[in-house]
Length: 128
Image (cartoon, rainbow, N blue to C red; front, side, top):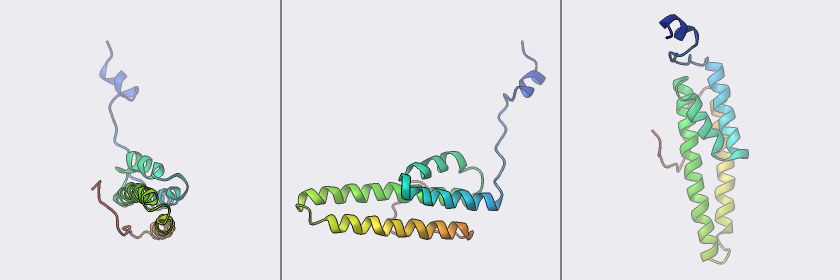
């Protein structure tokens, strides 16, 4: 049988993670927004799952980034369907959405690095 002291020394009781410093929160938020440019929704999802309880600033940015990335996938899938329906005419819309998304992600990264909140335009709020 294990004693309470043995279980505590083994690290069995859950200890809540400490809050990140404001500088670390800004860094992670910036990286999550920039990661969306190269890896899509994966950085936002991982950031949300791992960092959401480490500070209010990082939670706001990971939630915003994840909502935007999910919305972006929906918009690009809808546009892809339109490309087939319109025999390729909707390519302009597809690339317009993609370019706008790149600009919005860069703006969000800059705002996060400056310690400001940012909300992507035209984003569906799946996660609150």
